Image (cartoon, rainbow, N blue to C red; front, side, top):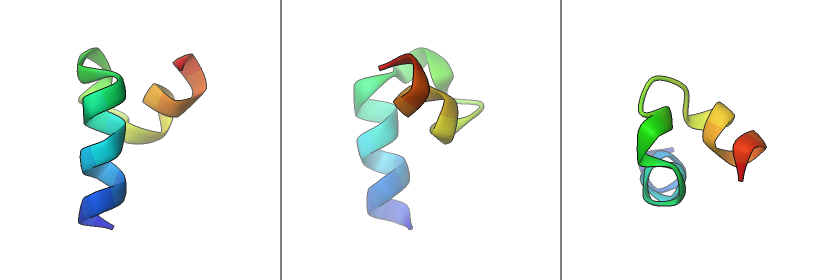
Length: 26
């Protein structure tokens, strides 16, 4: 789970609140 969140943050640092949102925005 840590790796999943880390990848999400790397793709969308702005979505630091919602890791899942980062993938959606991407």
